[in-house]
Length: 172
Figure 1 (cartoon, one colour):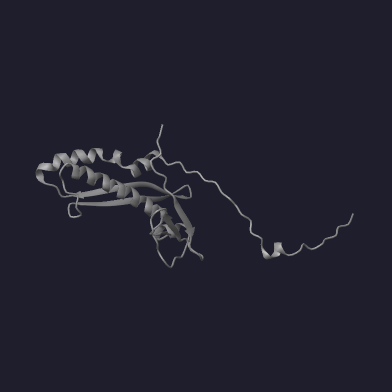
Figure 2 (cartoon, helix red, strand yellow):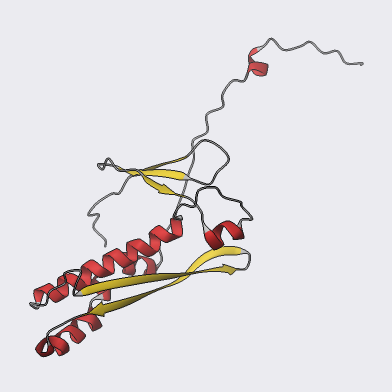
């Protein structure tokens, strides 16, 4: 049985106006993350955008790339190999496709560029072989994340609704 370790709470609102930009704030952190559309995503929705903004799918790619980078860096450092930016660079590429009329992130590929001492090459190769299973983001995406939703709807009184109802007559 799974044990809950953390509950991540994120408040999301759409920016005012006719745009696709959302603002997300993770509880406990002051930064606001902006998400929107750009490039092929804007083209998919047939949108003309004035401000390209990273999409929600870009953030998924970044999350997996960030987690995998941290996992491999930790594995390298545990084996005495530097993971400094001059020694480890990671490019994460997400493939976003039109699948049956829906935009879907179908794959994420990471490319590691490493500079390692000659005597550590075999150690680094073994670390690379086993690091993915330790990355929470990669494992979450690979296994499939359950998404559920519910709603609360509050009906606002409009000016028309707040005026007295007009009397109507009907023929009997």
